Image 1 (tube, rainbow, N blue to C red):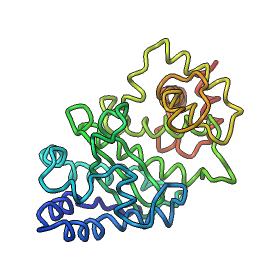
Image 2: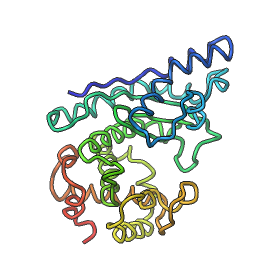
Image 3: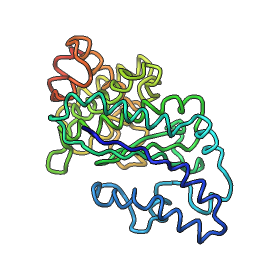
Image 4: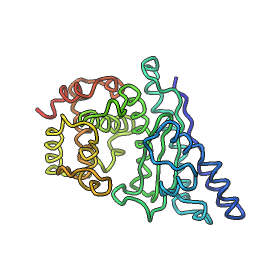
Length: 295
């Protein structure tokens, strides 16, 4: 059985805001968020994390103690939406879907975090929110919570949870790097898990915002790149991020690999009648082949 907990980080933020001076704020910040960065250092060495908690938080663009002199609008909005309760329920519900498969997965403990970042340092194309995961942890991040992204919080959480499950079955390491097929299936299946649990309304912009012409371009780029391994980020995120992240431009529209992966997995599920949970155990090349998407 998967043990889950969603941390009440809003109470950490409130304590920092109420602290009498900067030194007290910094101490509370270190106590509250230090465990997250310590866990990153231990289990996700590929992530850029400085030893000092405040420097690590600054690198990640988080709201810092000096920013928390008053209640930020983002915190008010998320509290009004009862986001921490919503997040906890989503994590519990997602984990419950894999209970019948507990003997086949290695994931046993998951801790969830909801963090606030500085809107001035945010990537505009993320539409005010993003998520990430590393072993044992899910992190949801908001810089500008709004009517678009707050309703998508449950989908974000189960998307990242699915990554933890799938990556436990098909690890992505320097010794066994993912290819293009592995990556598009990883993302497409995670978003399909969100859609299965919460409906297509929670599917993110990285799938829905691409038009038919660009989807066809993305499909062709992916098909031509199936033999590529190693740094395949360009096949997922697109040329938009090439200069920032220093990878080669390949003619991929923004987030094209996410969209292609979603349609591949959806086609596979329709053709096989399987649930996402069942498909989670199927190798990527088999999913791509049986989907018929590239036929």
